[in-house]
Image (cartoon, rainbow, N blue to C red; front, side, top):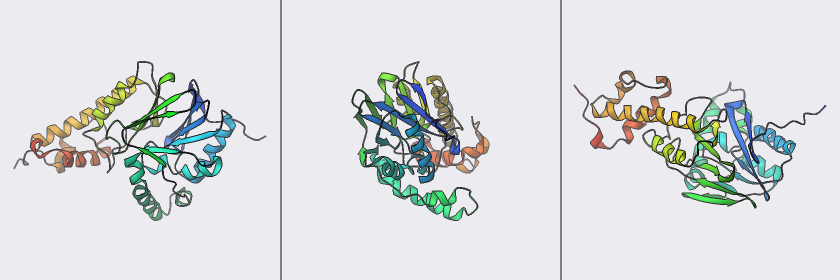
Length: 287
């Protein structure tokens, strides 16, 4: 018999989340009387076709809009598939994300060209880019008919172009990769480790104690989880500031600092943190 089950699970009224094993990616559907809004679209055309089948199995309405939470490939490589399968529709993202998707995707394609033994290499390289069509700068409200959904750029953190999605009537917040549950948040070469904690402060201010929080990767969490993650990111930022202010050189910072995460996860954080610090907060290295 054919599989008629959908991965989408309702986590709040007319808000469904599907969790996919590959990269622990979450795809969210927000339902309104005018149709469904999909937040993020997965990491390849092939993976997105599975998502599209799950949308159909859910049977909650037509797909009428997309949101990309930032410019990294695992959140938008399914855009073209969704448009092919469901028709043209607005694709929302921050202006920064829209302007940097092509360059970011180029680095991804280059990486997988070299990764000849990666099991998903071919499907990733076969993906066609489809850029966001509706960029915004700081905040925008989307009308789903009988429901309003807010897209908010709270500041720089995981990237310069992160957005969060707030569904006020359901008390749900979609955090993108500003919040991760499956692993510690990824601090990469385009992250802002010194600003990420204050960006999360704004995100937390959008929550109540009962808010359902959907991270970019991993299981659904709550406000307490986000606050704990903000504390860890704050410790990382303050440790970088402290080490730099005491004249500890960047090359020794990882070894000398007391870190909340494995040091192997923090190489980019330390390098970027030192680069982003104003000169007034850095002393010359002690000799």
